[in-house]
Image (cartoon, rainbow, N blue to C red; front, side, top):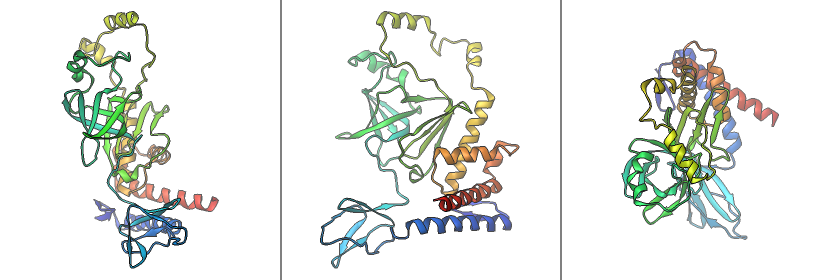
Length: 329
């Protein structure tokens, strides 16, 4: 058995040597990049005392010098000096895209687990109603809350901010809402970096990928976004009469609406790629996920992606990619 990043996986002696070599190469590449900025607990942080400075998170003053109180990388923003921890729990920031699971339907709000120390709150007033019309929420809307989200539903939302009753979310766009026909994955939050784009439609495979800043990742069948335009009330009412709900659909219609086998395989392949990257402790980005999925096409079975040989191949590929990228740079 070989021990890999705290997880036990069966490795042959050759695989163990190959993996150690790849991880050592990656470590040497990253340590060279961060050698000036990396600190451990009690390390001294050089600062300019003449210009003045502000001590931020992970720093303290001892005997006239600034020292680090956590392991991480020193960051500087104007006069502010702080230490960004490399492995930390999720800390919500306003505007973060998060994926979560509904744990309670309360009066005028849903309580959602977002992998944070406290549950988040999504108010009924902070989301679009199914009819798409902007209006005041009524007692009828409150009674119909379970028709929107109920317990154990997976939802996507945006962090609105901290209020007196806790962390609040909002879902005022059609890209947010209930997620169906897919897999919810949980990985360490520090592996998901904040980027401009967290929603990805992979047209080639017909799937949607949402990289939640909180470490919850959604991989599922592509869902066409609904039209966000406010339409004529009368036309809207007639549409509601004509369109059958999912409960009134016959068994035949439900069978026709199922997720195709190929799409389900693509969902599993992408989910397994994320599991492998998480096991190796690599940052999860759309580029490296798709690269890993492409690598897996040579395998006969999708479940082979979770085997030790494929993990070793992914580590070797990443070491090679970073090494060539550094040479080009």
